[in-house]
Image (cartoon, rainbow, N blue to C red; front, top):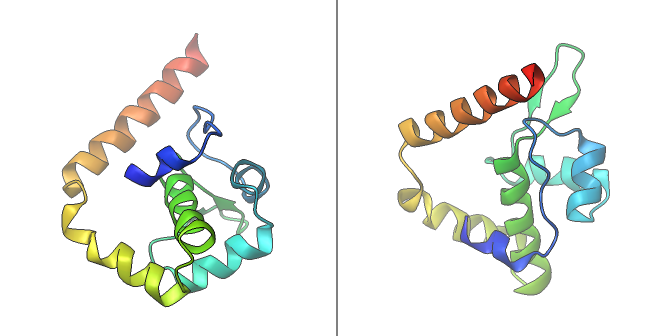
Length: 114
């Protein structure tokens, strides 16, 4: 995503992040992250069997972009949603997203074996 360049904080290289870790990375309270799940359909962390949220690096980049749109560009939630929805056609094809996720998963497994 292009707008993650507006953030100086680097996202650690790992597969999944808890809501607490994401909260620290993006410098937002966890309740804001939960609220954004209800407002932005693309913010959908995976859930464990016990219901804990697991965010990917892509999820964090999206949250950073939403934060940028709302806090820096002063978009309304509806405006940010429309802005993000307007870019849908510009996203990478699903096969590329799948391959990115597969690469990350394989890297994670390789790191566990090293």
